[in-house]
Image 1: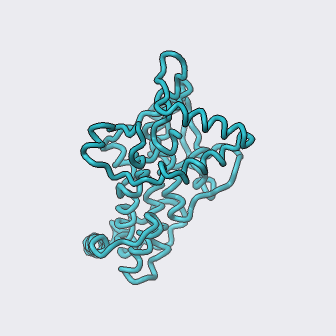
Image 2: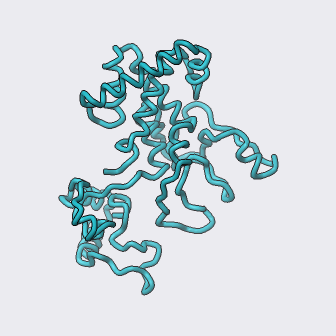
Image 3: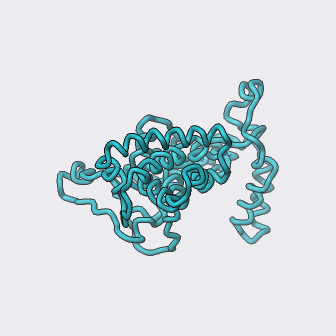
Length: 280
């Protein structure tokens, strides 16, 4: 329930004891518990029930009166709206680009991180070498952690020094900078751009928008995308070296043209839209 609605039926999921919060909807909690047992402990069945319910399918639009009465949506009077966790954002970016490796099990992998992160913390005793090939695109579940340092792209993550079942959800400029500049997101932008580079500009940007947001842009949105593309293209045509440097990100780079770099700018912008990073 917490994963789907952003907050559990019991808010203090880390404490179901006397010091924790009482469930807001105890009858619903009891019904779900019985349903889980009678379905043979089928978690997929429970998840399907939740996401196909009228409560989950509500719009997240809220009136001023309802917001004042229930700002945290504990009464479930509207659809849930919250930013996706960082691990899910990384997996989503890879999936949009067609890069996500769905393999199950196996050893951990090392996604991209800025150079020198480990060396600085461990005074040169450890060196971080990113995985190569398909391993680089494994789901974030398989990312290697050290207990004393979290992968830099995983903001709002557990500290790994103790078990945490409810992470903080914050919003800082550093998170926006990560989504705009992390190597994984830039590579996803490049691959998204490469796959549609042979299309006319309008159709190209519509295709990327469709892949990320699962809908076509309206006329106003398309006009903004085309405008930003033309601005970026004018810059990179005057600075082809900058285009080449920007587009040479990730593995299997085949094209570093100004057209690709300009399309990457728009693809990155779409990946960073509120609609792309928010559960709604």
